[in-house]
Length: 129
Image (cartoon, rainbow, N blue to C red; front, side, top):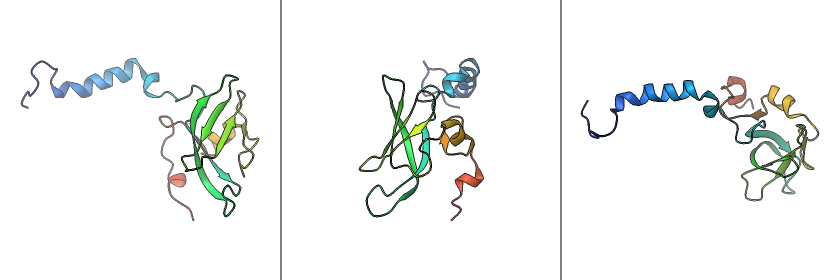
């Protein structure tokens, strides 16, 4: 293999070095965006536009408030928001299936995800319609 960068370690050392970093710092490679909270929550929303309800809308973690709640927003042009209390209960006035539910129950139903912890789920990944 030609050595294009003589002062840098050879490319063939990159993979073992990455494996070593992962072994030494595994939690850094699997950390949540907001510690202890999922990175995304999937909920249905009751008629947010006045025309049709939305099913399986993805809310992404956005911020941690000073009182310990976590704010989630959609990536739609007019964001829909939900809050998760410090004790893990979801609240949002227009949520059809998540309002008042515990985050732990949403995780067990594959409706709340930490990107680096959530393995692929063939049932969830295929659209069952």
